[in-house]
Length: 133
Image (cartoon, rainbow, N blue to C red; front, side, top):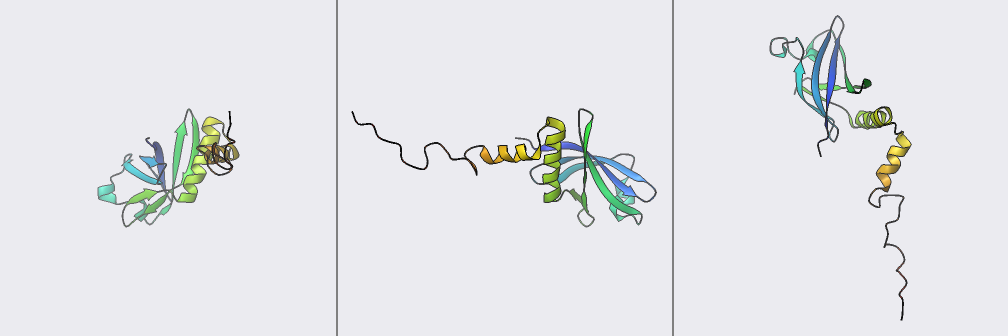
């Protein structure tokens, strides 16, 4: 199953906003294939290296609805990512906004599928009674 979704990234500088697009891996939080719009990263370096850099945010969009989130930038490797806590928040907010599912329902579905926590699996527990003919 492909867990990558397209996102828009905004590197906020004191005087400018650098826009780019990328692919967020919903399993790991890594952002890959970052493509800058009207910005030459080879000549200018990462926006996060600029002295006017303030923060980076991302936007996940679906049918005109948006979920905004914080993006971490590692200036040494040039990688963009989302922290595990932020990734969980994105999933919950996206499920609520895009599918109308609230966080409690999402958690309940995750824990009951396949005999997970909180639900006994059929055939386990006390032994079945035997019929004698």
